[in-house]
Amino acid sequence: MLAALALSGASFAQVLAPTGKDPFEAVVAARLAAEDQPTCVAVGMVGEFGRTFFACTPSAGKVLIDKDSIFEVGSFTKVLTGLLLADMIHRGEVALSDPISKYAPPGAPLPKQSGREITLGDLVTHRSSLPRLPTAYQPSDLSNPYKGFDSKALYEALAKTELTADIGTRQEYSNFGYMLLSDLLGRRAGKRFDVLLEERILKPLGMTSTSVVLTPEAAKRRVQGHGPNYREVPAWDFEPEVAGAGGVNASLLDLMRFADAAAGRRTMGLKPVFDTSFVPLINEPERTSTLFAWGMRKRAVGRLLFHNGQTGGMRTMVVVNPDNGTGAVVLTDSGANLEDLAFHLADPTLPMKVKREEMQLDEAKLDEYVGTYTLAPNFELRVFREGSRLLVQATGQQAVPMFAELTDRFFLKLVDAQLTFRRGTEGKVVSVVLHQGGRDVPGPRKP
Image (cartoon, rainbow, N blue to C red; front, top):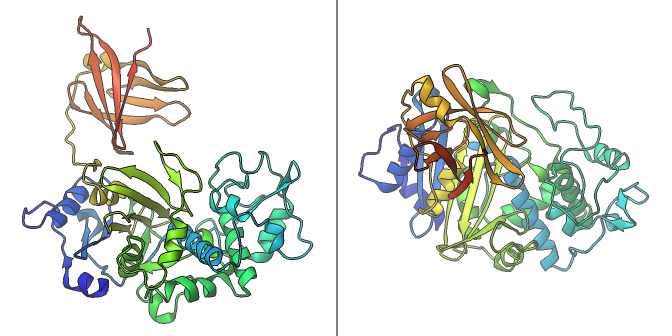
């Protein structure tokens, strides 16, 4: 059982340099050593042997988290909502083609486009044409943005929503859509969303420390989240009936239980439901397919199913491989993005951010890289100098500093990306290669 494995394999450490004694711990420590932001991390792996590891960067202080500490998992909640939808489909209670009017309050004004209604399938795949956030939404407290937005507010917002694109024609990530989906599933079952989720998914999988509304005991185990400069920030609160977009709280051990089930090791009677949720609803064999909230990429090791999450003070990433029965969970108590660590643990051929040392180049040398590089018809990188530093600006994005690692080799700190400049026969820079997310994208320098 996973619980026993996770307990017996638990490790507690603050060592930030690989010791060579344990490959798993060494990988996590190496990734933390490369992290620029203060953070503490809880990492779990599932497979033949369950493993956990907890550590902090020196700037974040001592390790105060363990396998039972409760994190906000943010948008990873959508995977649970998608699995609940798959459960209701498996039971014959709903269908992907069902229009939202079938389960919405009678007479509720609902947005349409060209006479077409939004369906449950549109909501789960982000093809509803609903905006990312509810129309005209103005939270009373920006530090706790979803508090007070209940079912009544949801349908008031829907009544004011005008769709700007044809339903089902494009993907646009929508928390609004998942808040609606969770409300509709609860209405269909005659139970509030969080109650239904606990009954159908959480209890069968033994996820006893996972919920939308925390008990007093669980609240004592809640992790403190941190924003920029590791400043403490308030927890986020979702109204339970619409919490399917991002309102779940969970422990590392519970998410390992979930990953173990998704990887096919202990499905606790939910195998047909997981199988349903693994069906590609938008199939992109060469890119990322969309399942029931999961993204999926096909790799040599098998199918990697994944979803992240972020709140005001925490980040989550879960990656599972149902083809070899493994998975990885990474939780941070800050905005530090360690998604690459989860992918690397699931597939070691995928790159992980490593510690890079900055070297100084004289200003005359920096001028050699200044220019615009075309990586795609509608995507360019503009490299320019400000004083003694170089910046790079991608099309439609803000400029960010770049740092020399070697001559002709630069790295970014705000994102895990590197740039290698190529020179022609005369020694002048003629092109660049962008290294990011396991891909190498070349682009010539414009004349």
